[in-house]
Image 1: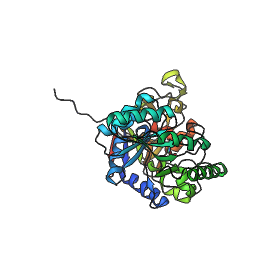
Image 2: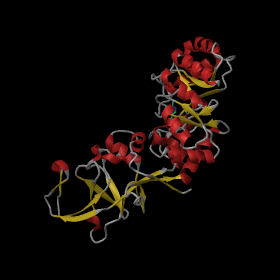
Image 3: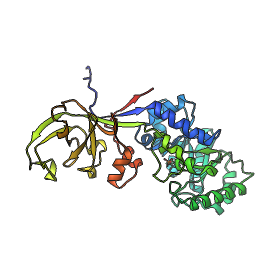
Image 4: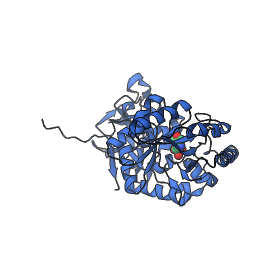
Length: 377
Ligand SMILES: *Cc1c(COP(=O)(O)O)cnc(C)c1O
């Protein structure tokens, strides 16, 4: 049966030229060091396959993902790369991790032993990265436990501890005191583990790539900056200004109506028109990842004009007040949720600020219903 063809009205546009630009900027910051792009969470909502395929084309071959499931999806999509799985997991995933050639981040003996067994069974070797908790306080073994842990790993012939890694909880804050202590501590761990054949030590996220050059070590793991978004507003390095947002999120007007003053709109009537208004409907809602808490808090761009979103954001539709465009707005007009139109721009940071969250969450929340469309290839 022929499939009906229809492109969705609400789409995310992924500008690969900007991804390339951001990557080059980050690579310049770290020189010859290895750069392992972090593409977990569907590449921060940008589409992991699209992003990975482009980065492979640019010559990158090692990526940070959350877990084996993300790695399997990318493998199945034909992405030929090494996946470092960043989240702690359980021994039950060992065989899958070995089968897809992942390099898991580990922090328990249970996990390294299970991985070594799985590798032996598969007739392969597995490389892992040992997570050292220098102050993030999420996963990882304590610095003083590292030599003993490595000693135990030595007894597992099918397992190689290839990397030693750590992570920053506050590299994006102006005060770098704690981050610098972590770097010093990580340095001491590295000193204490000479002779264990560790090949690559890595610590830096995006914020550290910009603001903590001493944290470069052998490889860096930037995520958010690849996508052209700032890790926070407190990054000191002026080059952070050169980042270009990779994602634009756009929809189209599907309904227009004149409404008199004093009319309640959408669920709960939390908005009433204050004057005779021209109201547009757009097919985007919280099922697309437009957070319902943004209701009455955001502007969309239509014809280069900021138009306030009004009334509750619903699952599939939202309303915008386009009174300023009376006589101009038409059915089918583009409405920008995140991105640029003429001289106006709405950023992921704007949405994050209204929501009391970070840009990371805003873009990652865009759901699978929204197709990611490649532009600027
Ligand atoms: C997500 C993540 C990163 C990337 O962080 P950004 O702030 O997005 O650059 C790096 N390392 C680990 C362990 C992570 O979980």
